[in-house]
Image 1 (cartoon, rainbow, N blue to C red):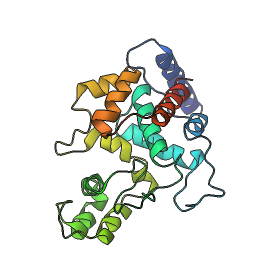
Image 2: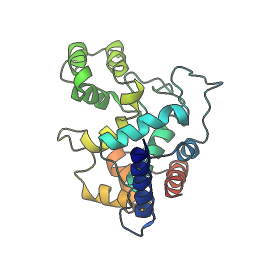
Image 3: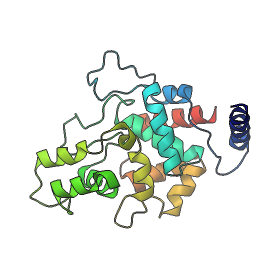
Image 4: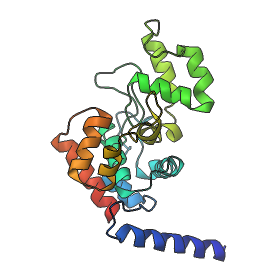
Length: 227
């Protein structure tokens, strides 16, 4: 026990030293509950409109850190981008599927559209067979009904997969299964922690536009993880 405590303390110390160093790509420590609570603006599920979907920082934290570990998301800039995206898309983890306007098949904490939901479910070993049985190999098939889209989405809504969806999308989505990482400008921009770099990520990887509230969320996440 003493050895484990010493080892953990040494890791955290080295982690904080690395994070404080003036490097282009600062390595991140495991996200803390205080950092995550700041990023999601202190979400409480006590009076949630979607109590089955809402998660506060304490509930989300282990799944967030496991996802970053599993997908090797190790820099402050990349973690801040993914966390701010998830928080923005789900109202601070208040919901897990698209309610506004209620688009079939859209969901997870990354709020992915059905074509990516389908790929994620097929790429995940424990859900792959069921996803293919439900919808077949082509997510754009006209035979796929709204109910089928929602059934496939349901396969990846558990906390472990839902909170890992942004990391999967960043690293493994798309026909080449390289996500956003095939474009060096996206990766380098996020790791550099610059507004210009994050803007490239939002526009070229996520495929949307920068808005003041998106930017404010990213800045809050970046500042929280650097603290």
